[in-house]
Structures are given as structure tokens and as C-alpha cells.
Length: 323
Image (cartoon, rainbow, N blue to C red; front, side, top):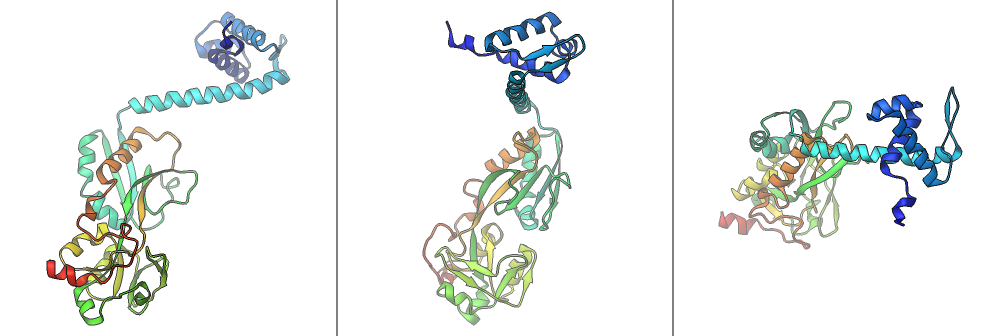
């Protein structure tokens, strides 16, 4: 005798769950598209297989036994999982369409998403994309956002989070600033320089050496592009992500003071919905991983933080003579 004969069938569990929820053999049969007689046969088979009565039926009502109540909870989970699996397969087969609402940090959106989004739209012509580029914290559920791009790991535990690519940073200054003030030779010397800071961020700058240095300076911005412009103007030292300062470093407008400034973070895609993202959300996230990761092109030819474990500044003389 097969061991499977000792276990109830999935079909029987589905029928039993619907029977309990509707409270009616007629309604269950109509909902499932089968006869009342087949519902009765399946219930009898279940009770025989389990060796326990599951329902008490009278002419007026139907009620669960203690065994039936326990069994129903298990059946309900099986039905939910089956429905969930069916939805996930249907979504995999569906063509992305409709409107996709995306929020992204201002500078990252301008420099890295806007120049690329045409390729995504060309791949999915049935999609329309609405992008909100902002540095404020967006309530994804309240504002009905489909996907958020975040640069640091989100704290919302209920959201679906996927890492897209690394974000690395450099400690930079303008050539003019370094001529006037010199470059810091150790992390500790950074504290002796005016530092340009990002509003809301910690004023403890972290280095991949493990040191944390308290900094101060004349200027604070709430936008990365503004910090970049202030750094190019020679107003102080500035820490910038490489996607923002890479071209300035390559073209000599900014000079890395060290290749070990802060260990970096990552770009994350955040889906506020559920375990199975919609086709349009899944399409965008997969495209972002393909487009940006795992080694972003903006790190090309840069002395990138996170790849070195020791202080290697100053580097400005070498870079200036080779540019």
C-alpha cells in the first residue's frame, strides 16, 4: 500500500476549506464547478482517511468538530499557498503594462536613471513611467509608489528589498584647494580642514581603516550636486559618491585625497507591496540589476573606496601630472 494513501489529497483539502467558509454544499459545488454529490463523496473520503469526523450536519446548520477545526486551519494555509503560487506564475507570464511610479534620490535620478530610462521604455512599450526625483523621505504606501530606489539599506522590515549595485565614495577637493591648504595625509588630519557636509547625515566621517573622524565646516547642503559644485569651487573637503564625482576626477576638476574614504553602501530597490512583485515592478528591478550591477561603469579608472584597506593619500600629484 502506498504511503500517500494515508494522507488527504490537496483537492480534498481545498474542497473542505471552501465548504467550511461557505457553510453550504450547494454554494461550494457552484463555486468549484462540481456536483454536490462529489463534494459529499470527498468529505466522506477525508473523514475515512483521517479516521475522524470533521463536520456535524443537521437539517439547519453545519458545524466543525474539534478535529475539523484543527484540520481546517491546515487546509486554509494550503489553499492560500496554492492561490499564491498560481498568482506568481500568472504574473511571470504577464506582460508589464500600465503606469509605474518610481521615486529616486535627486542626484542619482538625474545622473544615472534619466539617461538610461529610454532603454527600459524601449524594452517595455506598454509601460508608462512616472519618476519623482527627490531627496525627501517618501511614504511609499501613502503616495502609492511602486518602487523606490534608496542609497543605503532601508529600515522598513515589511518591504521587499533587493540590492542593485555598490555605491562607493571618495574624499575629494579641488586642485586649487589642495594647492592652498595641502592634502590630509591621515584620516586624523581631515579634522583640521573645512569639510562640506550633507544635511541630515552624520558629521562623523568613516574611513575603511576603521577610523571615524568628527568634521566641521562652513557649508551644509541637502543635495549631492550642490556639494559637488561647492567642492569644485574650492570651499573645502567633500565626500562624494563615485557616480557623482567620477567625471570630475577623471577630468581634473576634483582630486581624490585618499582612495579609502568611507566603506560605501549600495543602491537598493524597495517594493512596498508583497512577496510577489507585479510584472512591471519585477521588470524594472531586473533591468536595473542588468544595467547597473555588479560593477557600475561610473567606477571605471577611479581609485575606488572599498577596494583598499589602508590609507593611500594624498594622490593628487600623481593624478594631476597624468591628466
